[in-house]
Length: 83
Image (tube, rainbow, N blue to C red; front, side, top):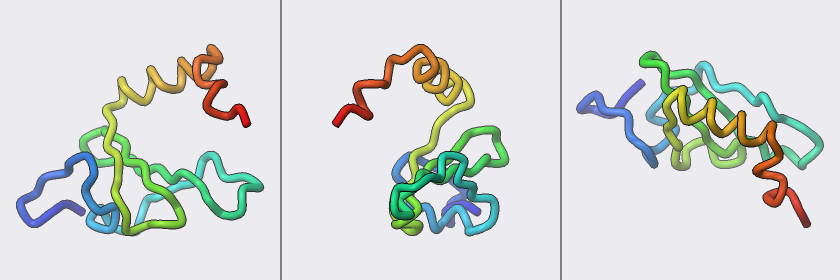
């Protein structure tokens, strides 16, 4: 579930985190291109792109995820979805 030296770091290959436990909480009609999340043993959250499961994983603390979700709920990320 971690690299050979036991570290989990931002940008590491998501495949090094194993295949079990990945979820698609935001899956929708977008052609299979979803963000997948995985709760790590230390409480952090990993994110990866579903169409590149061996690609880089972004690692966030629970506080960072909470701040992002709160900002989305307040509309602070609406500009990201504008066409």
